[in-house]
Structures are given as structure tokens and as C-alpha cells.
Image 1 (tube, each protein chain N blue to C red):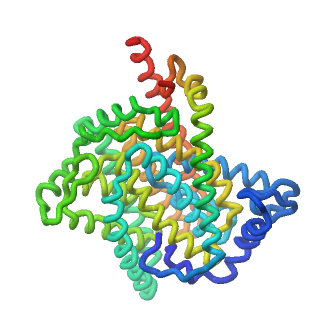
Image 2 (cartoon, rainbow over the protein chains, first blue to last red; image 1 turned 180 degrees about the vertical axis):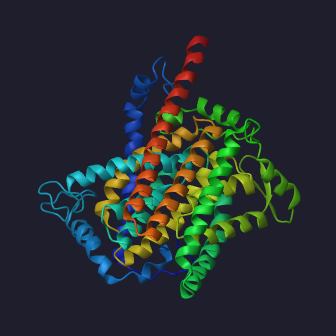
Length: 55
Length: 404
């Protein structure tokens, strides 16, 4: 957690944080796409029956 | 250890981080580089200098932490930093990388909670302001206590009392049949019927919070403190801005004092003092962590405390875990959530107490036992979340099949 400390501009630190942010967004979108593609099938296999989420 | 002291990290702490992370960062094309003979010490595939075995371990650990983080809105730095210390990383790298990981996980989990309509941006904005001021006051208090030689003892005692106290209160409340927040379960159950988000990545559904009933303490505060301006939050909670600011300041103060992200303090504070519905408290807390974690990890990054060889694989696992955990909040009823949450806090409290005792008695084994206890509890709770969610989904799918 950060308080009122005002960070000075540092391109290396910005690149590091930018990389983490980019990875987070790519993973979010990627996993969402994957979930759409194979999610219902996996849920059906795990939950059984008509499958929740297969609306 | 406080994140605010990032700029004071000795330069000796930089080598491991920069060595593994930046060389690959600058030299690789994609996010996950493939280097040879990296810092991980294993020939072949490496992730920003981390060998395949450690990378796989981080992915698995990230999955567990992600489930807890997405479900509770906390548990990142609380679990990751001690684990990294156990693996032999320098404290600055363990804290900095833990914070960068929390930041990344919070981004992912917040996006998911946003999709589920569980982020109150008004509450989040107000909380960020109050928390930031509180953290700064807490940080100054730490330096004062350090000057008079009482920092370590005081902080650990507060930690144990706070974790134990909140854990006991939350668990007792959740286990009580007369719990005031029981009716929230209805709202959550309704959400779960729209768990298309669970199966389809959560797109348009909005959390149905119309049946939300705040806990008795929150109700009393809302009825007693009616100092304008008043704001209406998600779940039709009407509360004074001053209550939110006071809660934010108090939780920020404790957060700055203990040097932790503070999700385990803020989440119950938002539920019990402000009266926010549990899913909204989780989502809003994550939203706040995006800001605080981002600034904190930037500060650590400046001092070389962020190792992408740790953060990238951890995040890879936690991104999946956070999806599972966030979606589970819309399936498992709120009573279930708070029982798990309380259990985690109690385990953490015992672990810190055992670790502190080990430090006092000079028995390193006790410190390891404390850490193993909290990591074991984390794995057990993450497993329980997955099992409970699947069981709930199975139960819900049956009547639907019959009805059709």
C-alpha cells in the first residue's frame, strides 16, 4: 500500500508495472475467451446434467 | 515491513530482482521469454530468468492465491510475501514482487467483479482518499515507534489481536443462525441463477442487491450518524460520507501501521461499519487495491524490488484462480463466504503468533511451522471454495432439470 509518498518518474519501474498491467489484461481477456470456448463443456463435465451456464 | 519504505531499501536488494527480470524483459519479445541458463539456474525454458520447476510452482501457488483473492478480496501479500521469504528471496524482492503480484491480480479480479456489477466506484473513490491519508499517518506512527524501539513488538501484537479479533467476530457471526446478513443469501442466490457470468465470462448481468439487509452494527451506525452529505451506495445503503471517511481512515491507519494491503481489515469494515453487501465489499476492496498496489509496486520497482520472474508465473496461475474465486462469490451464499474468511483470519492470527513466539524464543522451526500453517490453510480454504461452488451448482442444476 502506498500513502502520500509522491513517486518520481522512473521509466524502468514504469515498464515493470506496465508489463504486469499488460499481462493482467491479456490474461483476463485470454482466459475469458477460453472460458467462452471450453467453459460450458468443462462445467457440464464437472456439474453434470443440463449444465449451469450453458443457457 | 511497510511498502512505504520502498525508497529505503538498500541497493544490495536490487541485484536478484533486476538480474532475473529486466534482462529478459528487455531481451524478450513476448511477455514470457524463453532464455537459456537464466538466473533460475536451469538450462532450457525460463520465465524472466526463473527455471521451469520454480515457474510451475509459482503458477500453482498463484492459482491458490488467485482463488482466495477473487473470493475474499484479500490474501495476496499476506500469503505471497512470507512464501517468497521462505524460498530465500531478499525481503525487498519478496515484498515488492508480492505487491506487484497483488496489483496484477487485483486488476484481473476487479474487471471480473465489474462484469458482475459488484464494484461500487463511489464508495471506492471515497475509500481511496480516506485510506491514503490513514496509511500516511500509520507510516509516520511506525517511524515514531521505531525511534523509541517499540515498532516490532507493538506491530506484531496489533497484528495478532486484529486478525484474531476480526476472525473470531466474522466466524461467530457467520456460524450464528440469527446472523443479520442471512437474507443476503437470497440476493446472492438470485445472482447465481444468472451465473452465465460463471460460465461465459460474465458480461451483462448486474448484481441483484435489492434484498440486501445490512448487519445490525451497520444499521445502528446508519441510523445514528446522519451527518450530511449522505450518499446512497449499491444495495440501497444510505450512509454519511463522514462514516465512510472515518472507516477508510481507520483501516488505512491500521494498514500503514501493519504494512499490509489491508483487504482483511477493509472488507469486514465495509460490511460491518458501512453496511455494504458482501459481494460489493469484495469488489470495491479489489478496486481500491488496484490503486494502492499499483503505486506501491511502482515505488518498489524504483528500488529494484519487483522480479518479473516471480510475478509473471504467479499472475499466470492467479488470473485463472481469480476468475474462479470471483465467480464463486456469485454462487456460494454470503454466509459461506464469511465462514471461510473468518477461518483464514484465525489461521493467520495463529500463524503470526507462533512465528512471533519462535522469534522471541529463537526457534526458527516455529516460524516455519507458522508459515506452513497459513499456507496449508490457504490451500485447504481454496479447495473448499471450489468444492462448495461445484456442490452448489450441482444442487441448483437439479431443480432446473426437473422443472424443464
